Length: 497
Image (tube, rainbow, N blue to C red; front, side):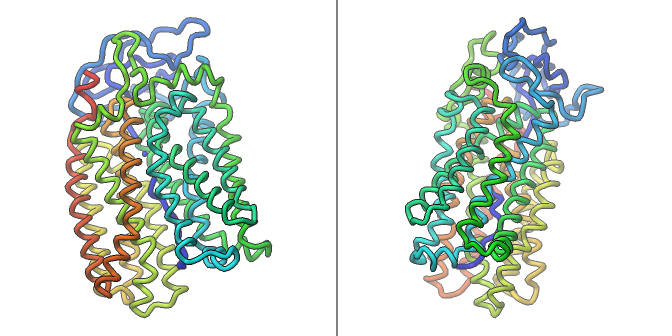
């Protein structure tokens, strides 16, 4: 098996709910593009400030709220977020942001660390090649399948408390793989994949809820954390194994430490279970929408998005870019080796593409923050990927660094756009959570077909030109979906009007 580096796809940004009244604990909430927020009223003693405040019903709008509207003058860089018990979250916005980003760092480590030692797992367990390959495919299926369980879990636990639970469960899943049995190896992989799936879905709603006026910055840092975590896991696992001399099991178990650290850093944000449920229930699909106390509205369920074209455009964009990413993650080393490159160098080229991906993932949310910049960003992303595909099909070895640089830039920008669109295209955290569930649940199930599909086309044709043309056709669908998702339209605006 070939070394598999980072898996940044995940795989979440933007403005506040139209017309929602800012909480007293977060006076710097962003002003919407169409309807100014109602003045904040002090909460009663002991009342949770995450509960919606009374105010005028939101005005319908056709534009995403994370547009050019500036934050109020004098707003701090990161406004404090209110805890479920009505107090400012412990440690303030810096600790809250650090907890989110450390959690994000863990969302690819448990998966990306397996690829570099996959040959050792296959011979030491022992496993067939098919079973060993399943260790890298099962997590992607988990990302899609378990994503749809997130709304029910949010209604039971609350978003902030649930994120802490995912980090603890992720720690357990990684440690389960220490047991010397095939059942423990696959059980730990499923537990880790399920934990990451839920956290994937939570991130857009949490960023929308806690950092609405700095969502572009937080989305850039979030997607960058995905790349950095995956790159660290793929690049350090083998050196750690060599240094420890204890085998792949103990090396993989070491990656439980950052997950445990993320749980401990996030612990102050969880609050009590009852308070978290009351405060965060409205953020789950089907829960009370912001402002429900005044209007009686309910938050959107997945059914409410079925007839929304923008919601499906975001979902298709997420699915197609993920499919291309996972397909090439599995097969680029084989493509390069079939063209005469050594196995060691082909693995390095795949790892090298991570570095331009980090740069693109950090910068793209800032470039697409304004609605007018989103369509050009989508076009640029697709064009860069298309050039990389063409180069890999025609001259893969002679200009390998150029093609892998372009591929990293295109893939990094694509995943960053896909996750950011979830927040840019929604009016509030409740809609962001619903769209995140639909886009990531469906998108990752589609993505799981990528490695099998590209391998099947290669087997039928015996070469790589036709498989790359097939990925080019997927790019055409990605372009159409991205342009549709870039329109100035807010998902669920009719349902929330």
